[in-house]
Length: 112
Length: 110
Image (tube, rainbow over the protein chains, first blue to last red):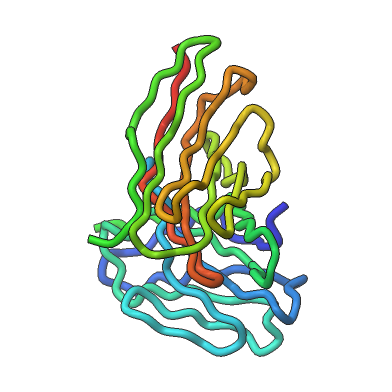
């Protein structure tokens, strides 16, 4: 079972910031928070990941609370092409089988 | 271009037939994975390989087989023993902890 909780759907206006929340209250100290997105009938696309500190790359920013029990993915200027299902995953690699547990995710709809 | 390729994009299987899905990567990643996705569901791990000539079963390996003879290639065979093979199959490879996915193959049963 997924160790994360996300809202099933969200809407965002084109050009505005999209803030996608994720709860992971049972996260372990060595587990990373990963975000992927999947556009219909395509493979999941890696977005960003982090352990404790906030992270930013060319696609998004990841804000992790100090207690690590929740995080927020921020798409700073959403476009129509950002419409997808966004998955928040907690994951520890460290010699394990590397099984990414994808839950139901959040369906983000970016509207003109 | 560097990346992961999967072929074919669509594959049709007749009853009792084995079919093989291709996955190739030129990212020089050691680890490769096969996942299955059913409509409206998350991904489930079928098999994974952390190094050439070695692979391990995932959560739903029954009815599937794999080989890893080359670092770049990790083909998946869906055997006739897999009674419900219709699904979207995704291959991934990883460097350290981050997995990158291919475009997927959709398998349909005739």
